[in-house]
Image 1 (cartoon, rainbow, N blue to C red):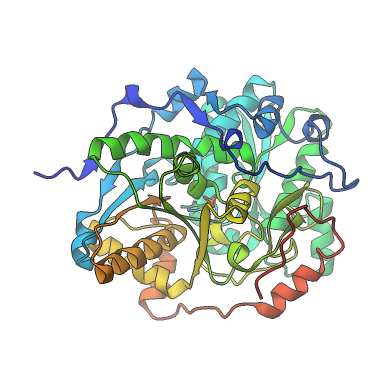
Image 2: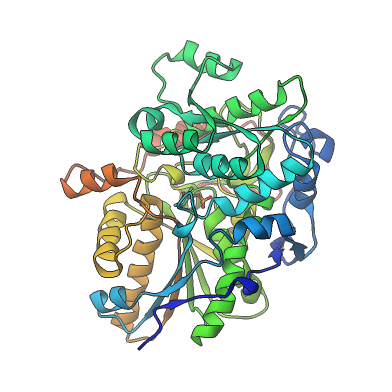
Length: 463
Ligand SMILES: *Cc1c(COP(=O)(O)O)cnc(C)c1O
């Protein structure tokens, strides 16, 4: 019998995360203080994050030890299986070999606990009692709620209002794990009140929810509350490299090495988690096509400028050098809620500038079609975000057939879609549609970042 899933024994769980900052051909430009425009130092970030995470954010060490307490929790679901997608290969009649890394087996159903567990741990050992965060469709909020439960921390989640109302199940998961979840914009913070005074019917956005969560953390007088972000930041991407490091061992067992590595990208964390160890190989001379996939309706990497921008809507978060559509950009309400962020991780942005990562965008209908093909061939029902990676893998597999090439394709199956069935229902009943490029909205939002400082490598958007 042919091996279908490549499993690693528990003792093969990676003991270190990989920090790509040690190998970047162009070092990252500094993150700037939102008020002064000067590079931020540890003291500026201390009200937001515990010191060990601040140290990781700027570390230049190539490998960083994963503490035993984190490894113990990772073992609940890690190492995750790497699958050879024989069913999909057959359905596409492709000579390509397709592999996918199944990050959907975590308790929260996605890759997000890889960093949530780590962040909860470092807050815990720093004497923090409570963590605040934002969530879009609820994937990140549920991952952090799960992780806080394991470490005995309080968890407060500001959930984008439209999802809070339309997608109750992830809220229920958060509450099951003991978190407190409110709809954002809320009346609990000044940021929320400000938005509501301008627009009482605001459906909310990730940027607004981030502002609320940051305010709730820094305004807590006890000093025992910190904020947590589920993507974008350097330390988050580093925690996720456990995916790619496992995968490199598994590919070796399979006797293959990928020609093409693919991940969907919202803030960039699951893509980077799989890709960064392969980025290291590419920097060292390997030939790999490393593809980050975003929705055509939120084309941060493929259309947005590389500029300084705020991470949130109300300009409380630091200015990061990244591909961005502007912090006031509001994308169409596509079902891949986790891919509707205006910015992109600085590390992923820099790798795009350096020609190491190739960004592409795909329309919503193609992604759901791919998700259905995958479900019928492989069984697993994917998160709408993950469908973007599947659609790109299918494009590459079809191309390999046309060219008669035996390519090895590897993608990150970032999460399952079992809490997203309403989106599948909309697709199957023909109600889902593609969204035209929101050019006017992008131009409007980009005006708002024009006055901000420009990074050294500033690049205008591709319009
Ligand atoms: C949140 C999420 C994403 C997008 O976030 P990244 O930080 O870009 O990884 C992708 N897939 C799933 C399943 C998610 O939950």
